Amino acid sequence: MLMLMLVTSARPVCAGPGDMPVPVAVAQGVYVMQGSGDAVAPANRGIVANNGFIVGASGVTVIDTGSSYRYGRALIEAIHKVTPLPIELVIITHQAAEFVFGASAFRDQDVPILAHRRTAELIRERCAICLTKLRRTLGEEEMAGSRVTVPDRTVDGSTQIESGGRQLALLHFGPASTPGDLAVLDTSTGVLFAGGLVSVGRIPELRNENIPGWLDALQRLQVTDARIVVPGFGPLVEKQDVAQTGVYLRQLDAGVRRAYEAGVGLTEAMRSVQVPDFSRYKLYAVAQPQNVQRLYLQLENQ
Image 1 (cartoon, rainbow, N blue to C red):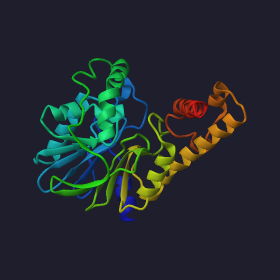
Image 2: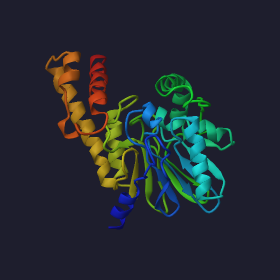
Image 3: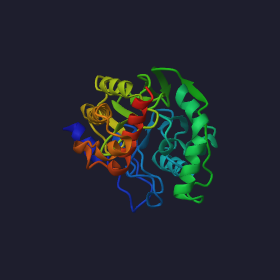
């Protein structure tokens, strides 16, 4: 019952479209700022993904930073309204535009930024293109000050760290939704920030995925000590609910393989391969055919 109460109460209320989410305490010292889960658009100012922060005895650890410098600055201000303690560390869970571009606001305050080594490499190699796309979508004013910010600290695998007086488990299960996915578990409360590994109520967009590895990571998340899971997109869930992301991936992969083996062409496969159980999820109309295309082309290139 306590878990359900926390999950229900962890849905930030915004004053209006595109406004900054309100930090909501979901456990002792753990705050979540929940995005809309929609596609990035001017109306939502790109505030679509979830992020949060953990307040310890000596400082604050931030998990993901949003899609713009403006959001990063607003996040810093929101943290300072919660606590006077310094921000000691930013952790980036994966390389996706909705999660990384607020990091420049923290770099300007000399806050260390940590990610998996492969995530840092992908940010360096690819995020300039992502930034150009965001500027085109959101406009120069919204994206003012945003820049590619490569993490200055990296890890190569799962590890335990102390940050701000809290013990955090950084979990890397190998290539999954991206090559460098990290999940961040606050060991004292059991709150797990799942980043790109979990999407709730929103179709995951395949970009740099390894589906077998992703499915394995989802299974391994379910045997952690997590009590509350903060997905990259969507409302908070209990750890057994992360399996739904895996259900979608399995059904998608099976549908594309059936179409390919039956000789269905790419254009027709993009139209006909459906996953009805998830048709009400956000982004389905756009992301589903794109995901089909990506997997189909992978089969052609094998």
